[in-house]
Length: 253
Image 1 (tube, rainbow, N blue to C red):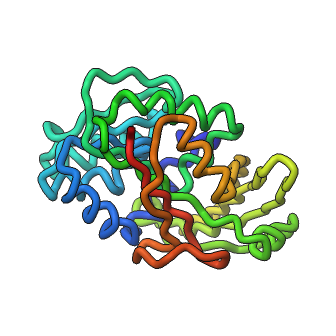
Image 2 (image 1 turned 180 degrees about the vertical axis):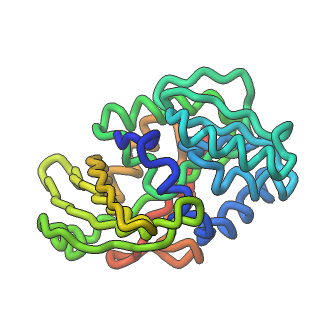
């Protein structure tokens, strides 16, 4: 699993304005009511706007650094009383509340690197959801052509200026695919070039375990969820073999 404590600040600045998934979450949250359970809540990117929309949430994450960023965001927005942040392993978290919806965004479920880890997590979350409540899994679509592009080459993925340090941050990726074990092996290379000319490099390795559609459907079924829909994008487009996302909407039975 990726060490988010090391990269919390860089992650925060890179994805500060990403909100492509918010309309989908609002659509289902408005139907479900609250409270909401966010697994892998990270820096509060999604947590804060949902709290601003009037929802009560519990956010679970294993990274103290990311949760600290979320707390600062909530405090700045005067929303701390609407959100309960819990530092815990999402496979073994203990919660006393029952929720109207659960969700885990942007590949976070895939940080669970084995099918057993993924099964344990889904079983763990099941009793926290009220019967009939939706669970949203937001995954990348394991399109074969795209997977095969991950051939070990170093490629520039993004660059931006850090507003706090003034450094230019260049983010590169090295990706390889282990098809037999359904693992995407990634090394993020962060290069920071500071205004005084100094540079700093950080290497961050992590794995993602991708799921095929039928496998994901079966996993949900054996863990006590009934699949309702599979979307291929945040715009709720039908899922196809070349969709950018594989977003599964399931109901807790």
